[in-house]
Amino acid sequence: MTGCQANVSDNAATVVSVSEEKRLENPFVHTAYFWFKESATTQQIEDFKESAKRLAEIETVKFFHAGEPAPTTREVIENTYDYAVVFHFKDLEAQEFYQKAPLHIQMIEDHSEIWERVMVTDISNN
Image (cartoon, rainbow, N blue to C red; front, side):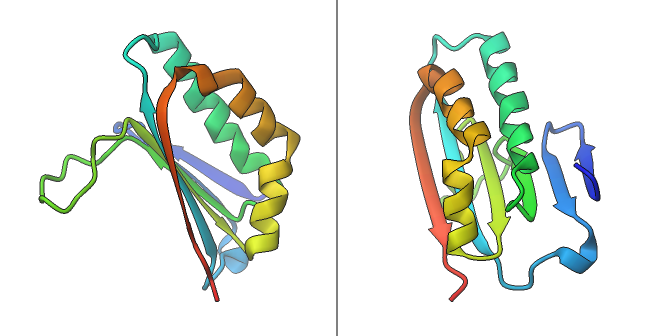
């Protein structure tokens, strides 16, 4: 990941971003929220998280952030998920490239058995 910086903090969040001059002012934002099955083992979850972090290596990803829900308690906050990933892309086409990337497809094939539910949101940059 030449030119990228990765930080892992105590709350298990991960941020990987391309150098500041390449950061997008108006990105296409793709977010996926995961709810794990009760039968998922700690090792399976850790393997999934490591695999998810590697998705930042896909060439069209301009920003990546991942982590568990923040300990916020307002009624309007959805915090029942177990883990989420956030990606920024230049545009819809860049996000569609990511969807077809072998690394993304392999991550789904390798780990989908531990998900009870997945919710994806996309925010247009138009």
